[in-house]
Image (tube, rainbow, N blue to C red):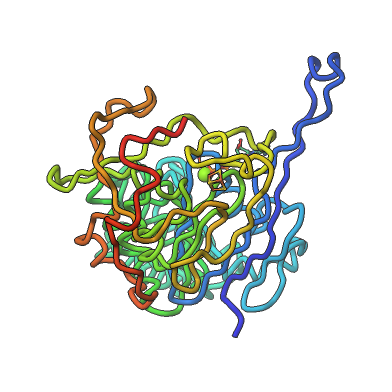
Length: 395
Ligand SMILES: Nc1ncnc2c1ncn2[C@@H]1O[C@H](COP(=O)(O)OP(=O)(O)OP(=O)(O)O)[C@@H](O)[C@H]1O
Ligand code: SF4
Ligand SMILES: [Mg+2]
């Protein structure tokens, strides 16, 4: 059976115009490889999280899927039908089925419009919804589904009269009013405080659980996905470097980058703190992708082969089916984290609270959906030394 969303080898390269200095120095135009061969799928009733640092290409992937930018290469299928490269007219029926929720609830809503007109606008654009009364009823229904109750009291209000959480729910209601099968939520809760964030993400989870909608959730917050996502895809420099059921990826990350992202997650309980692997520096310039494994300049496990061989995403030993990573020297599944003798941080991460390794978070794992993923080999501290002990710094 075909997936709700099936993306294959998606590529988005931006050609950056040459500056006068480039012309004088006879430098060629730069090509930014924002998305560099991404394949992923989302099924109905499934919440898939795309995570990665800033600049890793998450939003570019979303925009390419939705046809907001024209991908350089690749296939995007909705329920088995290819939609990439369709013109505006041919794309219109597909747009109804795919909606996006943007990151910024303050910037994405027109401050002059009422909640009613914001939520009804997609119906007008797509000439759906029938009479004014029918459109209003659909808007009320969408607001209620987005958790704004009683919806009638919100209809005449403008964005400035709403809290941040309420604004984001209005944005979600505008995304829901057309009854999309696919919702792409790009950092939908990153600007909200923790309690409101949980409400918004819980709402997305409920939408998936209703079985009709599939969600691609874009975030840089791994703590978030641990609670809400069925599957996880970790993106680095335009590519997916690890993917699989959330539970198995977080219990036994195979890629050092995933492990470092996990290690930067805050944990409230000091008794559960272990050593952390510190990810310093920034994502390298996607216009100058390093040879070999693109992560090798930051990877403490890199050897000579990593400088020349570009690893493909594929199955990893000791992991259940569906868990893949792009690494020549994947981390063993049964390693344990050793606490560092003295904590080391890089300047950009100094000041954050000390954090644990989420491998040690049994309480959080209990919340993870997708528990049918399979059984991991038991950890054997004596047999498998941790190749990335706490305190490791990735430059
Ligand atoms: N139109 C463009 N022209 C040139 N480069 C671009 C363009 N759009 C995006 N990029 C570059 O592509 C890379 C990926 O950008 P993108 O916005 O997809 O990252 P992101 O993972 O969503 O980051 P964030 O978490 O900060 O939102 C960045 O290096 C960005 O500068
Ligand atoms: S392939 Fe090598 S450099 Fe890349 S993540 Fe794996 S160990 Fe590190
Ligand atoms: Mg983004």
